[in-house]
Length: 264
Image (cartoon, rainbow, N blue to C red):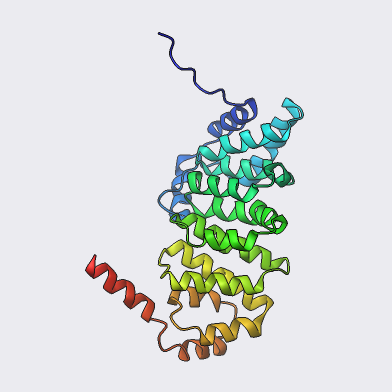
């Protein structure tokens, strides 16, 4: 009986993997895990982003030109490893080639985030580097990102916040940040990493549209304390104190989840 063949790994993927294994440092990887979270996987390559970029250029030069379909297959191979350095290589490989994702690019990116992303480092790098560009070109991106905000996977929900944040930086979708915030609030979003991105998104709104953001923070009841803390981080101390004083029910959100956990 013939055994099933293992899928062939592309030579570029293999070259990147061998390089990172050769320069792996488990102690450095363990230290990074404390920063990125318990599910974070890495080789522990020192100066990872710079060295990954250098090695990727060398691997591409050695292999020669690749078409869009091959590029996407390599990107998925690298992301599927869930190793931080390979994920960064995947994002670098796709940078400047987001059009290769095609008409349903956001759908494909959603699938990758849902299956392969389990730390904020890769989530944010992917959104700030690639996802926002694809969203910017998609006519239905607001509807799609709002759907991401209610996805069962918290990394997809975080990706929605970070993508809207980056679109705001490009001068787009200020109203979408408010809409997304309201959606997360109504669904009682309680994931730590989503709340931090939610607050980061609102902090960006404060920087770009201070009157709109401050009015929202003053009047929207029930925003989680962690979100408010991050959103107001760059405001003057007196303004932060004023916003917190004017928010008598900002702890109600935590109380709701305390009761829910008690009843669970």
